[in-house]
Length: 422
Ligand SMILES: Cc1cc2nc3c(=O)[nH]c(=O)nc-3n(C[C@H](O)[C@H](O)[C@H](O)COP(=O)(O)OP(=O)(O)OC[C@H]3O[C@@H](n4cnc5c(N)ncnc54)[C@H](O)[C@@H]3O)c2cc1C
Image (cartoon, rainbow, N blue to C red; front, side, top):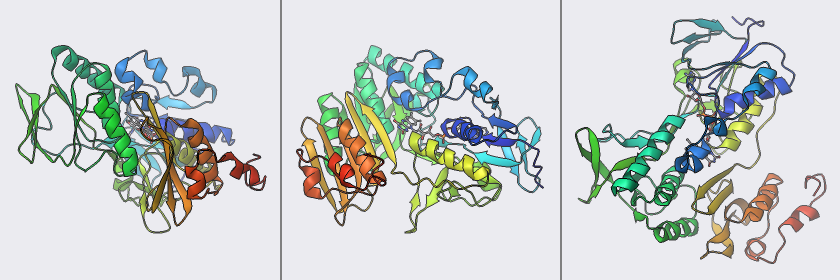
């Protein structure tokens, strides 16, 4: 039974949760609003945790998503260190770990994701670390420094974004690093071979040992602490610490237990609506079924923010589909990788810029149409490609590959209404 006077409750005080609350206020919601998070810290940004923060953990305020006053000013009540344990949909109530209950008029789920755990013998040894929270980042930062000082190697399991950002930081701190990747190249699920190869060269040039097709079988240690990582080919890699970066698992546990439709994430439509009209969901905890039947899961700041705006509007009974091209970034050494669009299903890749440096963009085409662009230290290419994709415009592969061709001209030529006034 819905009590329309009850507050809107938001579970998860991260990137998506904060944005849902703020958008509700911006869209004119004046009722009570409660943002509930199980961490002790006020809402914070996660991207620096695998980048700058690893090198120089600083004041927590530097990670803050919003200044302390911002939520108070908008009458957004923040309840930290509070675990929601169940959703009683029949009674429209949340249950908390301390036994309390709270009624909601509408509910938003923004529970994020959990670092995927390594399910192997030895994975629970000390100094086997993964990265999701401020505490994780602090522990990894300390471990990297200790390894650098003691001359012990760092082993990173997983050659994806997080693993490679940690590897770059470890090298900057002076530690020896080995990356064990199970597939034949780096970031292989999301980039073309030419991009993987560029990062392979860069990491090797910085002294990282990269091992491909590495099937980790167990971790060994003594006195409760990891000392080596074993692979199926019989090799054993000495380790002062091990950082596991093998992806995330969307945290849909509350939703699934409450009977909401889930499939490796809380299933939402493009307006962030779940299978229950009173409940919306946004961010890393969600998954979306595309028209071709594929399941789309995005773990990025942009997705969390844009889906959150849609979720807030959905809770107010309106529609705001999130259709913009997805984008993401990763910082490794002095290279900024910026990705826009979804490259899945591409049949042609052309490059623009200097592949060897590397300072280039890889343009992904499907049947002659642009579907995605990865830019390495080519910010302008990224910005222009983003606008092209958002407006459904495509250069030809020849135009994309020609550094003298002005991508911006396609936006100018498009009708002003389409081209965002360009
Ligand atoms: C190390 C790292 C680096 C990243 N780098 C980038 C990057 O460079 N670029 C980029 O675009 N994205 C990056 N991301 C991804 C980006 O940070 C996430 O996509 C974004 O934080 C998702 O926001 P969210 O609100 O969905 O989840 P989160 O920020 O994880 O917030 C979810 C919150 O809900 C809480 N919660 C869960 N269950 C409950 C419960 N039952 N009760 C109460 N609270 C609960 C969680 O503890 C958490 O605080 C990075 C992520 C990490 C971890």
